[in-house]
Length: 440
Image 1 (cartoon, rainbow, N blue to C red):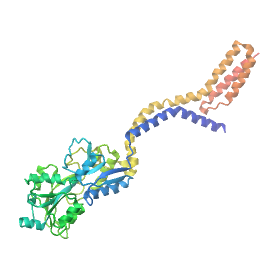
Image 2: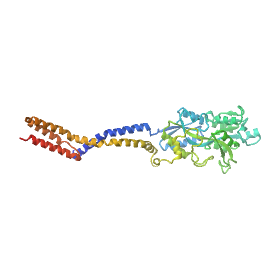
Image 3: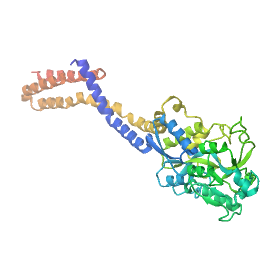
Image 4: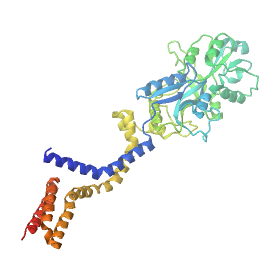
């Protein structure tokens, strides 16, 4: 091995040994910060949706496709609807869920620490009735109020949907006593089959227009959509409801469906999450919500949703950021996982840098000490030889042999060129002591 290479390797070793403790401390603090911040989100998340062919299921599939592009698997958990979704969140079986405004027991001080990512869309209360049932009960083909459901067979949906609770509130407000309406609680598909077969007079859904069942019934002959003339009054009486209008011809312009504006009431559906859900997942869902729900619909204009209105729970900071701020610059050019890692770790890196910079000043003196110690430690032995000769001159021959051995060992010492003057000074001092020993 050449002397130059050996010198370089020794210098590198000294540098590593000098800076090693500081580097070890920095790595340890980074590992601790990574564990504490947990910047990398889980690879899977559970989203509670709703019944088959419902709008909740359709939106769930859209989120599933959107997050798959980021390497996140969204497991869709079917349910009976909004109330069931809320219970799934509270039981820890779902991380996120679609929950309808006004759902029973949805309170701001919810003990399960639920948060909202914003209001996503309106869910009108669709009350479909058979034309022949209206003709039979009131001798006219169209109805204009919920009170006219008296005496009819009405399906209000399964218990888990939240619709039974909502309809009870609305019927009570119309002073329809128990038994005035024959209510069943079938799921959507069997209820629709029974309705079309004439076994039910009316169906009640609370769903976004994307529901395939809603779109089918709107174009079914002999089926009417209830026009709620008092829709403004309902909105004033129930804060979780909003008055909406289904515009004439919006379903099918060519066939003019519906044939007239239909007044309705609607609740707002939010995307709720457990507060313990990983922040990166909340960020992804909140950002994708801007794409999934921002288009114009039958009851809203473009970019009207998502928003923070009508929220019964605190809005998560990830939801606020997605609605009020542009996409972070790093996420525009880097994969989400990398941008998220940098965004969550940059502050920690800055703090570590500020703490380690003063400590790094110790490294140069320590390195200098390690290099010089390879030279200076021989001065102790050289002093011993000189002192022995001065106190015991008769031992000069033995000390001369010791000096030869010392010089041979010093010849093997290698130091960086910047410290070569100290090595040569040691050799000069050895030469001076040798001259002193050889003096007669």
